[in-house]
View 1: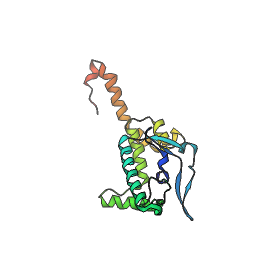
View 2: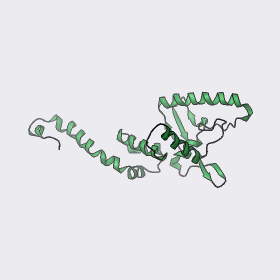
View 3: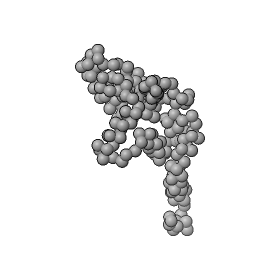
View 4: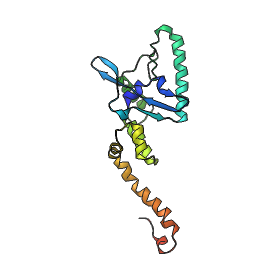
Length: 183
């Protein structure tokens, strides 16, 4: 979620444990952007992260350290991972506008930032990640929410399941069933 990403602090990254803990949310209010607690207990979670992302985070942290040294007392150090050059927080709406500009600049299809979350969920299910694990990573309060939201993915996997059963069970048999062709 956008607010969870923008609220991440370096203290939320466990470089040794290879995970990130989601514990806060940055939201827009009439008074500006503020940090708020997450909505549900299941929204508080630790997510294992890929080594490639860990490498990028380390490089990003090094760049931030250089900015801190360069700006000295002018650097607003709230420990945020995603922040402006001077350490100030990035308002959620501004982040969304920058995302759209990035897509346009690189000739990519214009999508909502939240669509990246849906893509992540869809890929997890397509890669065979159990729905319970995907649900926990997404911060859903129940696996039922995940299955309801992504039932189209589960439906698309029906052919794959049938093919695996065919290969695993019927592929071991010899006889008349071997000559049947897939539709």
